[in-house]
Image (cartoon, rainbow, N blue to C red):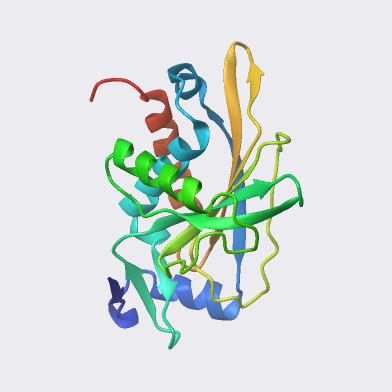
Length: 211
C-alpha cells in the first residue's frame, strides 16, 4: 500500500522543499560492518544481509518514501529488496527481487527459490515484474572499498535508498565488510543513515543469539 503524505502537515516539509527543489542533493556514506558472528554461523552472506537491510528499511519510514506516477510524495507500508546476480560468462548482471518476509527462514527460502528460478537468466531483468516498492542492493565481492558513490542526476525524483556491499577482509581477528548507503537528502538525513547502520551492526552482532 502507498499512503500519500500531506506536505502541509509534514514535519520535513521545509527540508524536502530545500533538498528536492532548491538544492537537489543525494549523499552517500560508507562504513565497515563487523560480520564475524554471521560468518562463524555458516549462514550465506547475501540472503542474510538482504534480509537484515530489508528489516531495517521496513522499520523506518524515511527509507520507504517514494513519488507516485503523478509526482506525489508518499510512503510504502512495505519494501522488498531488488538485488544483482553476476554472470561470469558474459561479465554482466541481472536484477532479481524477493518478497520480504519478517521471519528469516521464510525469506531465505523465498530467496533460494528466486535464485533457482531466475538466477541464471541473462538480461537486465532476471526476474520479471519488479514491484515499485523495491529498493536496490548490489554486491561487489571482488574488492573491499573505502568509499563508493553513485552519481544520480540533479533533480532526480528517485527517493529509495541504494545499498552496495563489498568484499569482506580480516582485521585483528575480526571480519569486516564495506557497506555504502546512498540516499536522497530530501527524505533522509545523516542521523537516519547512522541509526540504520548502528542498528544493522547490532543485528549482526546478535546473529545466532536467542532472542
